[in-house]
Image 1: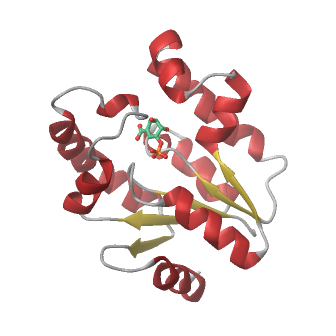
Image 2 (image 1 turned 135 degrees about the vertical axis):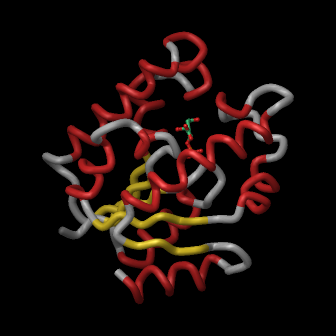
Length: 167
Ligand code: S3P
């Protein structure tokens, strides 16, 4: 097993940290949101609006299922909702070492304020949605992970070193 799978809430730094980690290891970097957008020829926002969330969730599962045949030497960042769907956490754990990038709710809210790309955060009550979603998702991330890395008040370099030391 040689892949590293980054999971965590929206705004937890999966894509930024994943890109740097892959560069450091000379691994490929992949991101399920980017793969889905490419495959659909639409943004995540458009997929949610035109095809619905359930369609997007199915695309996420199809993406990780197909990876079982080819994923090698890759750091994979997955959308924040992907590990939540029944059965997906098990697929991720078979694909590689699952690392949960854990951040405090205040850190996440500060990073997500003003976001316009994430359909789940649209509307005025977005910060209440973050609170509720995080409450329900955090235990699922913790269960799915082989390794939990807290990221609050750490710079990227410290986070990378900690991941490399512990995996
Ligand atoms: C989602 C997270 C997003 C994206 C979509 C839904 C979620 O990815 O997949 O907007 O349900 O948490 P990021 O976690 O990369 O923001």
